[in-house]
Image (cartoon, rainbow, N blue to C red; front, side, top):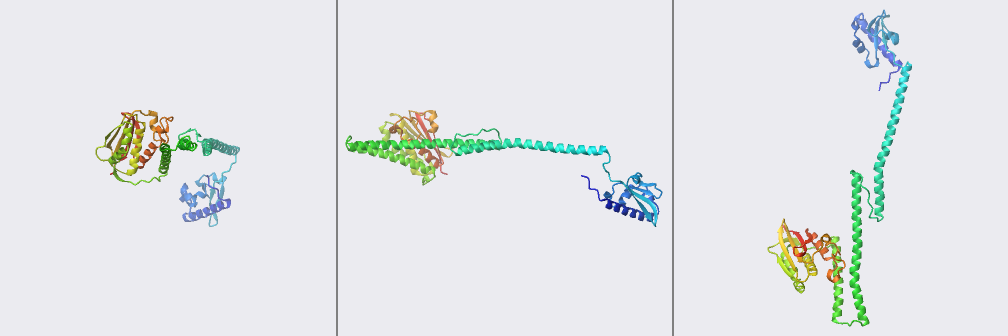
Length: 408
């Protein structure tokens, strides 16, 4: 941007001051030889130089001493007076103005071009804003609508993932959240259905037997009382298992941990099932040499081992075998519980530790139980920092492997 030109009076005053300084220098030198063809020195006398753009010095006869002689005819001219006589003239270039039609036309074209450029820039910015707005607002609006549907209970809601940026990752996280909620809702409904079924069956049996006793259809004998007690015990065990799993879910299940050797605990659990195995003609083989000390709750670990033995005793065909082996590997005590046929389909192995899961849903309760034993085993193993998994057994049945960290 060009500096604003100073007012005309101010420019005339500066020219008068320059004329006075030149008169002083002339009086000192006696002529104009000290400035002859020395324009830089003339500019130095015009303090400050930027205020007077172009200068010319003429002597008393009008001859040029320094500068452009044409300035005397075009611009402002001031006489240089020494002792009452004019010894020269100082001329300043005139201010430039748009004097021709070509200059005015050029300025108008430049102004129109500036307005056109500004309009194009504004239109481009507006179009870009619309495109970017749609690119960002549309996925956010779609995600907000899906969130409202998910909050209303529509867990099948999904949003398309159309990019790999932050919005795309947010959409993928939303889909994973929706899948988790849908799976949890399915498990909740199935859990409620299973619980109601498991509770309804023993209650129905109890009600039927009591009605038979009341109507005299069935005599009140020790056998009938034992049958009733059996149903009550089954109902109490189911309620106890549900309570234990509920406490484990909220972290309120009590564990009294200390350093214990798992070998005597396995033997204790096995001793309580000797008679049960004998009734089903099941041979038991063990390989429990050495010690395996872990930091855990002895009672809970015995419960875990008993549940695994109960699973083998319940599902292994009569005349089969049950093997229990222990080894130490990578700082862990690994216990393998193997039983003979029948085996478990490979598709069912990952689900064995789910609550109420049964390989054959049509099996009777007498053979299949409530489907909570292995779920409790998984909870106890996790509480000890261990792992539990199911796999096919070399004996033709099921292998359940429990891995617990050794005490350090």
